[in-house]
Length: 214
Image (tube, rainbow, N blue to C red; front, side, top):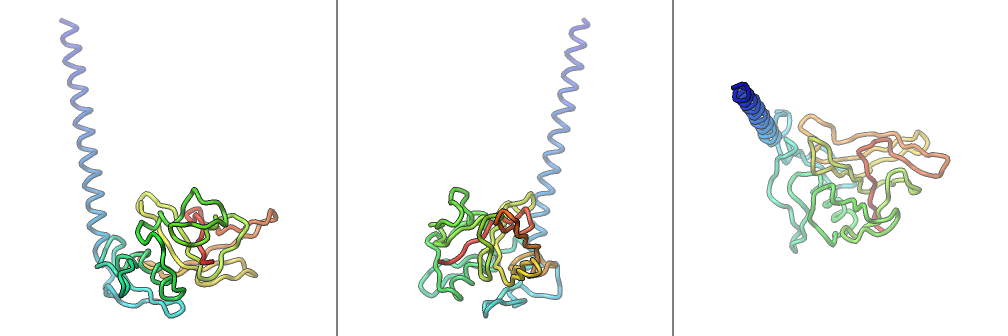
């Protein structure tokens, strides 16, 4: 009799655990769904999607509203894929296409895919057709370099930007970016640190490195 009662109690305990797990899963799904929905909206009434909000060397940065908002695909007259309007990838690829006349051999992929961990420091990233340098390596970044950020919990796709200004004397680096968020700036500044070992580090653990045209 006691064993039967014990089994009943164990079954009830298991049921409570399963119900709790199911409830937690439903809550997490609701949070993720709500986040995906909200980040597709334009929550900033001061700007409209597609409005020019900055530029570098004649290449415009457009306002995108929520970070997960997507317009149609931007392509060149002859069909080269520049990217989805107005995501961060679209800006950096448009900058390299319009400013530098560069077409990436692999014109697709998320921002995080622009940095190839298998490519050695200073070697050619063949998918992008650009030299790749690691953060905290021996090559400092330069104006026009394409900066690649690692993914985060809220942004699994990573991020990309362009170096817009460097002050070696003051030890600072500025980037320009598209689709940073409805209330975020198109510019960010980071400390640029030179170490006695001969390495240069942009002081952000999000930055993997930078790409550069030969």
